Amino acid sequence: MQKKLLYIFLLLCAATACKKDNNEPAPLVVYTVNVDGYTVTFNNTSTGATSWKWDFGDSTTSTEKSPVHTYKGKGKYVPTLYATSAAGVVADGSTVLRISKTSPVKLNDNSLADWDTISQNMITAGPAGGVFKKAKFDYDGQSMYFYVEMTGKVADGVIFDVYIDSDNSAGTGLLTALFTGGGYDVLLEGQLLLKPATAAIPMAMYYHTGAQTSFSFDQQSGTDFYSIGTVQEANGVIRFEGKLDRSKIKGFTGAAIRLGMVATTSDWGTQLGTIPDEGAPSFLLNMPE
Image (cartoon, one colour):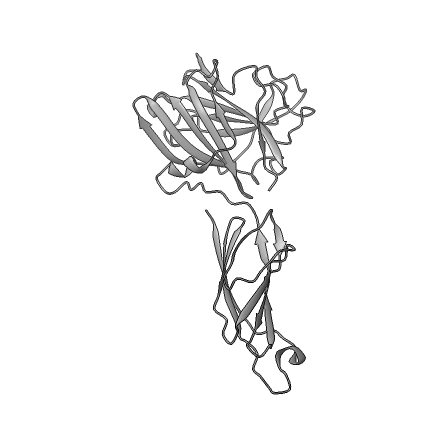
């Protein structure tokens, strides 16, 4: 989870607003701002004031000294604190906040517990799921995160095929009976859970070319489009997480994508399962924020 800490030290007021005829001093406006997703904690340490008014920049206000405020959506906001002294002298200070969605998922914490907080964007495998049991997804402005539960062993070297309709349009990309509802512009393929140095088929990215009914894909260079985080194996079940870099995959910058995953044995001999079920619509991941 990404947090931003902004330190504000402001004494912004016109002479007529800050002083009266008796030369009463103006309050000194000082506060810190801690941004955690859409929720902002304002810590007001101003001096010389007896009352406060916050204008959060979204048409809402508060008279608490140090409020906690949750914005309804991403965007740029300019909150302002108005501090008033006992003599009625007012000083104000403003700052600029940029609010955007963050994700609780961390790939470097050697844990999958952060996925327990994800209650939306989930798939439970159906009758054709095979080895797949469950998948979850989350996102932020830079990445799309994924979590998968499946039966098997990491050492099996299962080959994964991830079909992505990156522009959420059936008018471009491959049309396939594997997953309906989209045209698949991008195919990610390889032994996702094996380290690239030991994988006979390292994970690679392919872009669809030619007619929509033609299974024709061109391999792209580079492997920095994905990262794998924690992988856990116990009692015949593998649980793992990873992320895709939204900026590294063609068309993966809009508000929604569709995707489906296929697992195959390491020798390509047997399809082990799909999620969602084969023949069903691919999963629609909305990313409006």
